[in-house]
Image 1 (cartoon, helix red, strand yellow):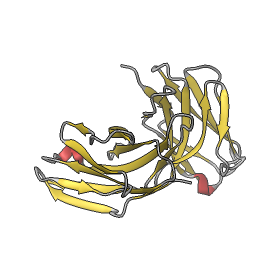
Image 2 (image 1 turned 120 degrees about the horizontal axis):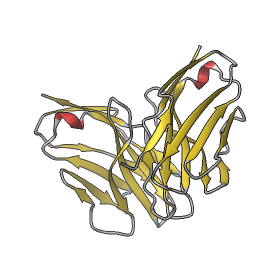
Image 3 (image 1 turned 90 degrees about the vertical axis):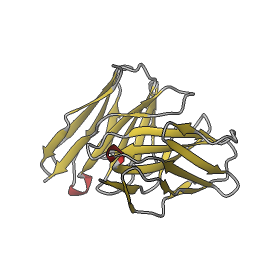
Image 4 (image 1 turned 45 degrees about the vertical axis):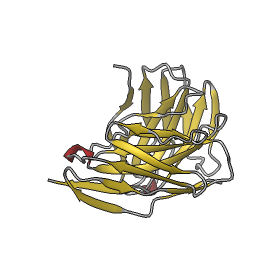
Length: 112
Length: 115
């Protein structure tokens, strides 16, 4: 089945230790998104790729970076995680012009 | 900027009953899309239903239907014959017309179906 896959599902890291989260998709969608969802809150868009074009939200901290080496994969890099970065990170994809976004299961990140 | 408001943080209903979740939004756009997403305790976000603002007819998907009132900027979700598997967090979301891919979510309604 076509799907959005996120690895790892759970990640524990130390304060200030870089971490990378992975997203892959078999839907062949050209748009990929990263959302941050803190406990009991709505998902908040961090950035998205439209093909190879990177679109950063104005209020996304510089600490968060992303890479998209090919259509299928997208990575979220947190360069120096702080305690406030503890959250669920959701990857989503869509085909431009079709609006509907399809979400992966998320990576739950805990920063100690 | 667009805002989405869900005024019911939590709701519960008996199995097989009908429940309506409320959502209002604020926008100056005339063309846009509205969505209801479901996030069960396993936490994968799933699309429940979508509505194009230019369509007057309310969207329906099996037991799920919406009441879209464009002038009032209201977009409620009705779940008929509720089932235990409907227990989840429900998010209402807004997207401007093609050209801006950003989803703006409401704060969610936690729905519990009681056996």
